[in-house]
Image (cartoon, rainbow, N blue to C red):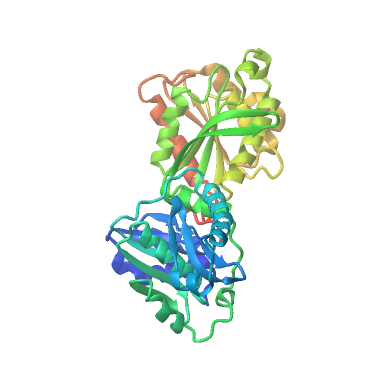
Length: 427
C-alpha cells in the first residue's frame, strides 16, 4: 500500500531511473495521475505535462469506445468498433462535439495558457495513479503517438498483470510497482486517496515548468494589474507592497524581486491603487485601504496557487500596509520584510502581527530609523532590525540594494513553513 500519490510517485520513479538523461517527457493523466507524474518528472529531471484525452463512446454503449480525441484536433478511431456498431457519421460527430467541448474546457482550466510540451521524436512516459481496465490510458497512448511520440511507456504504481499485458499492444513498455492479481478499486492501495482538483493539477504544472504572467487581481469592484513570476520548483511567493509615489514598476522592488527568483522564490508585484485613485493623495496614505487591497490580492493568489506559502515585502508606506494585513487574524503570512518602511503608520496593529518580521533601514535614514526602533518595541512576534550602514531612504548607494536583497532572501528562506523546502501540494 502507498501512503499517498506522492509516495507512490517516488517509488515509481525508482523503476524509471534508467530513463533519466534521455529525451523523455512525463505526461500525467488528470487528475489523479498528475501528482504521481510530478514526482517522476522531478526524480528523473524530465519536463512534466498533462495528456488530456476523452474517449468517444458508442451512443447506446458509452463504455465501449469507438475512438479518442486529444488536444490540437488529434483524433484516433477504431474502425472495427465503428463498423460493428453501425455508427453513422452524424452520430459520431455529436459525440465528438460534446467531448471536444469538455476537453477544451479542461485544457483552458488546467493549462492557463501554458503551451503543450512537444512530443515529436521523444519518449512519452504516460502516468496514472493506478490502472484497472486500461481503457483511458490506451487512448492516451494513441494520442501521444498521434502527437509525434517516437516511443510510449506506460507507468503506474498499481496495475493487474493481465491489464499490463493488454497495454503492451499500445505501449512499448509498461512499468508498475505493484501488480496484484485482483484490483477491485485503485483507492484500496492508498492510505490517502483524496480527490485531486483541477486547480492542484494546474499548480503542479506551474511548479515544474515555472510561470511568468501578467495578471489582473479583483479587489471589490476594482481590477488591479500585476506581474506573477513563479520559478521552476518555487514553493513560496513574495508579495511586494510598494510605497507612496511608486508602482509595480519600481526599479528597486524589481531588483529585489530578481534576487528572490534566483533564490527559488516566486514574486507578485501589483499596483494597490488604480490610476484614478492615485490622483487623490489621501489614498496613498490610507493604510487601511492599502492593507485591504493587499488582503484581497493574497486571497486571489491563494485561490490561483492554493498551496504556496505567502510572504510580504513592503517599502515605505507599503510596509505599514503589509504589517496591517499580516495582523489580520488567520492571515497565515510566513514572514514580513520592511525596506525603509513606515511601520509607525500601522502602530495600532503591530502587537497583533504574528509573522516573523525583519525591519531594514538605511543607517543614514535617521528619522525613519528612529520610527522603526519605536515600532520594533511594539512587535511581539519574532523580529529583527537590520541597519545598512551608509544607506539612505531609497538605498541608492553602491551595494545598498544588494544588502537589502541578501537580508530579505535570508529572512524569507529561514522562515518558510516546515515542509516547504519543496513545493509538494497535497495529493
